[in-house]
Image (cartoon, rainbow, N blue to C red):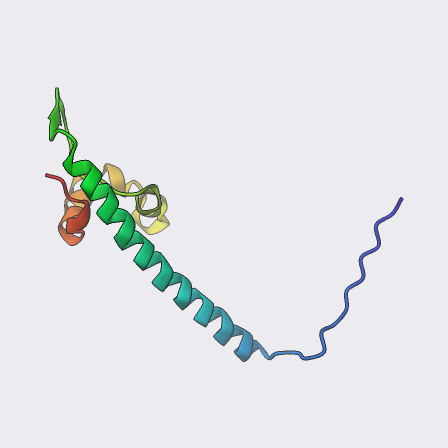
Length: 102
């Protein structure tokens, strides 16, 4: 049995400029939403981290961040291997005091 797909053109066609503007607005709204979520999530993570011991054996708690933030920095092609670089991590902690637990 074959699958027939029928595509109908919409009644109103928007221009590329209008589409670009719409996408830009949606991205800006998503960025605002993500920043708000980040602030709230980092507050919760920091509260949880404050209850942890600062040092467990040879391990010392240095920072606490959500997975989205970690992977954004770790997978950025312009900063390949950034999370393994001590100087980059120091800059990250300096610029984002909400994740610094030292």
